[in-house]
Image (cartoon, rainbow, N blue to C red):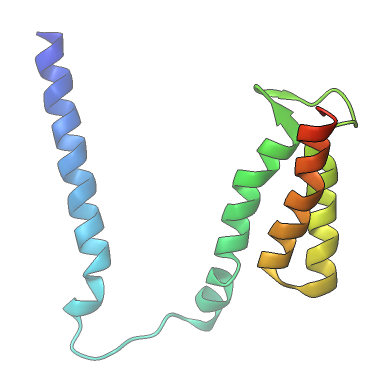
Length: 113
């Protein structure tokens, strides 16, 4: 009995999420004239990708298996610092990634940090 309820609930959640996705992605077709976001919203959305990236990367740099790292001799710290300096210097995300990985990989693979 519990299995059927779980399957029904799962199906309802999937259908609901699908409906919300279709509605939100087709929302612009409901209006006959074009509309723009307010300036503050456009400005805020410019920071969304970097905020999402920081939310994903930061825990990976400072935590291991749910706990804060215990040593400064961690290749992730040096790779992240090198990447941050590269971004500050060049303002280019590709350069940031390349420099960060160029520092991280030798320390992680070569020294076993």
